[in-house]
Length: 269
Image 1 (cartoon, helix red, strand yellow):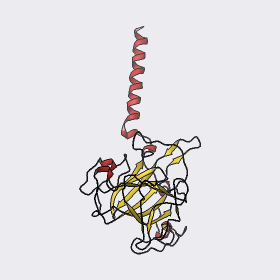
Image 2 (cartoon, one colour; image 1 turned 180 degrees about the vertical axis):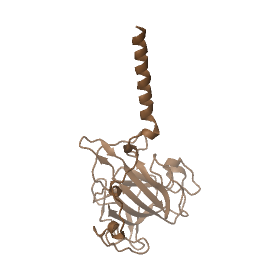
Image 3 (cartoon, rainbow, N blue to C red; image 1 turned 90 degrees about the horizontal axis):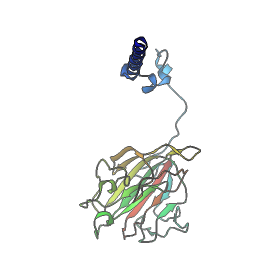
Image 4 (cartoon, rainbow, N blue to C red; image 1 turned 180 degrees about the horizontal axis):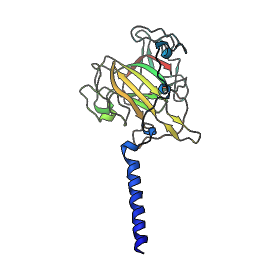
């Protein structure tokens, strides 16, 4: 019996040693490390062996003063809201100032959204809070830019106007606090430049890859490739129902926000 007990103890010790051996950093499998297969094998000795000539990237002509580049889809050209509709599908009811090339939220008329649907995009949009300050907190020049109709980048006049930081200007609403508050003075034009990669879902409707977002506010990086964890509700947790391409939506906060927008364009990625 003693021999059997000692044999069992010996097996237990060996098993523990093997387990410890597997868990040590020195014995980790290669899958735990980044390996670039294209740089494996025999290393090139001539410069031309690492030079590529295809595929040739398309030529895109940039424009000055944040105007749309040559391959962009212009969503507001300063004259009309023909690219937009209300949430009821009827023509967008917000007020257009053709003389100065911007439009303004029409209070309590509802959100507006693009006719065209998008997935991953580069977005440029400019917005302005009203110079006249009426309220404070979340009720001062509150609007929002919703990517794919469900993921909100907050628009808010935060100048001398503190609020919860995951709901301040430049935040992914209720999810990501911006790295900096980079607003211009109240009543002047802000710019948002966004690089957005849409989430991916499997055939069963389960999310297999989160969306990501990078935001430059007035040229300053405030969100650096952050993970979008789901929808951005006012109350509750983010939701992740499967979806495909969807409109860009602008928010009517319903409190006489008087936020204005101009120079909106996207590049599909």
